[in-house]
Length: 449
Ligand SMILES: Nc1ncnc2c1ncn2[C@@H]1O[C@H](COP(=O)(O)OP(=O)(O)O)[C@@H](O)[C@H]1O
Ligand SMILES: C=C(OP(=O)(O)O)C(=O)O
Image 1: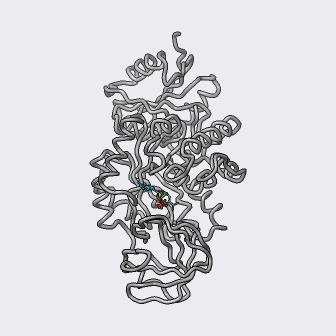
Image 2: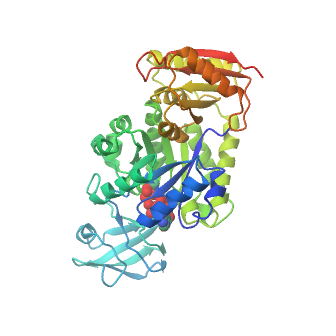
Image 3: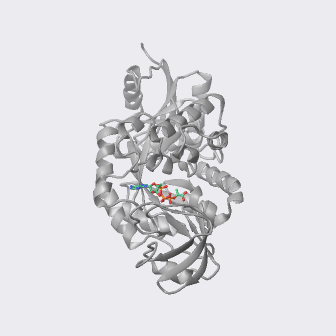
């Protein structure tokens, strides 16, 4: 079974296709920078109805400047004169925009694909000339190079965060995180209800990367804004560093943005896209995310199917080495489980975990076998949809002893799991009689057929 997971953004072009997408999608993403209370609820209902096994990532907008609502898309061409104004132009409803731009500064729209040079400005109007054209859509993002955003979570984010938790989000994507404090503040509010995914898209975040990774439950390589912020030519090495540090700390890492951009308008991807995806898989990302491709593209189902096919094919031939440091007894047992699964030719690694730590610890080693992640907490169980190789399975009863874990796991694996049948399994986990979070037993079992 495919081990690198697929995240797909739900939007106007996919809202009617959740059932078809669900065949390939592990995690649906709803970007709360768009839509309203009614459409957010509608998207949750659609996912819960047509893709009940998927989990849901809600992205909070953060302090990003964006265009306002446009009645219809506006095409702008190189050399066109353009006016930004709430009253009589392209709307931008943020004072920072009007105060921050200067004559001759550049305004970048939609992750820098559209560029405007400013020719004049006043306190509520900015005029410019289009340098790089494109199609303006409602609420597309705006970057102004060298202008810092306010940092941290905004009042609007807090309102949207509450809505996301009420609706049952499994993960919260935090935009424009700068330091671990941004994550801590939101954690106080979210508690254990959802995992916090820090989106790395600011240069400042790269300076505090290790601390952000330690504090977060997961990381997103948000290549859109990150590319504008750091310079596109720096992205390859920055991506590699973010993925490596996330893996070192065993935090799931999502690769995002311009993954299959050509498939917004074409049913076939480019060679370069296929190779970029393959390289990311080889770096060991947990998940790959589609944005415009599924939200507003013309081929949402083809895009997820293409991503599924590329991943499935590449995974046949690559082997990941474990990543260090491996310096605890828990790491030793997790590695023993992975080695045992290889040497004994077991079909699968079954991990029982109360806190989830053992599941993350085994997933971090990127074993060749799939991991059946068993947890007695259904809400926690869903979160592992994002993690490399993990097939989450929730059980209703907390295990009391290692013997009970072995017995229950064996019985569960003697039946079919997601159409898979197993002959031999490795069982690994933590002793329920000791504190949660440790990995301290491993056993190989041959199953009765
Ligand atoms: N919930 C939604 N409602 C309407 N349009 C959406 C929604 N989510 C995404 N989109 C559209 O899909 C595009 C790509 O989605 P995404 O990458 O999440 O957004 P952005 O890059 O604007 O932060 C958005 O710019 C927007 O045009
Ligand atoms: C994922 C990104 O953020 P957004 O939510 O703006 O799509 C990005 O910038 O790459």
